[in-house]
Image (cartoon, rainbow, N blue to C red):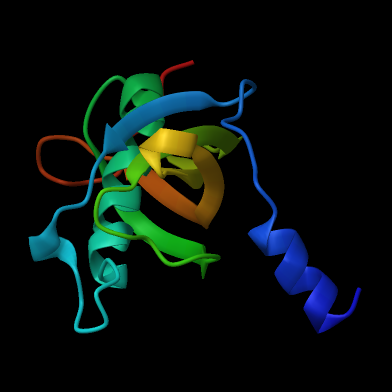
Length: 139
């Protein structure tokens, strides 16, 4: 696939997935934008981290902490007023850790809604006890 084809494919309209779990929705505001008027990447990363922790916290039945951001790809810029939907899928469950894939979709232009995948990430969380030490994930 050429660079132009890859760019065109990344621009192609998507639809919200039905095979993944919706874990969070949020609309970025003007205070979340950078000097270019796009939403600051660090803000998106923070939201992905929060969304990514939902399934591990549920599965581990308690506290989790982020131990690794294994991959983070910004596919499209995010704009003020985009409605962001965060979908999560559990990739792996270990003894104390859970790895999750998070995909972020933006719903744009309410008059003629367009759905675009804007970000995808892979993060690992560890279940922790009250002292912050790793603990077994209940089976």
